[in-house]
Image (cartoon, rainbow, N blue to C red; front, side, top):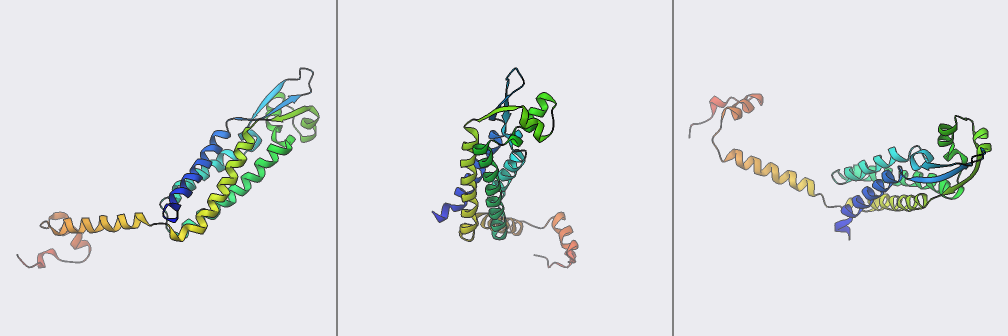
Length: 202
């Protein structure tokens, strides 16, 4: 389990970020206006929670970064992921269970031109939620757990990138040593303060 901890954490974080991005374009709430026509307006996730899309993109970036960073940044990014997960879970839970007027205010204002919290609230007849807020809330709870998991297991992640860099460096050095020096090697020697003309002849 620990040997695959990095992969598990990264996959969960990226998946949750992707759900957040997709959810931001879907209808979260339907608001019916008490304006005589009783028309319904669809409220997407990005309107219900303005920070949903940018924070979801940030989660995707954190997931990708966790796959390559060193130990210290694993702790930092893991903790940041958990904080974002907790914040988004709190905001999403409010929309999912309370249906606040503030979540539909931007959509109502765009459709009617009416501004002000009291004026918008007076115009709203009812607000109903789709399944998307609950689905997204589950994703944020998983994201919070994934961030905590990343912090707890970060010290035991396999540092595959370091081994690759070491092998690559050794291969390059071996290749350089197995061929005669050329003009580029001579310039490199000069930049280090060595005089290539002082080399002993083979």
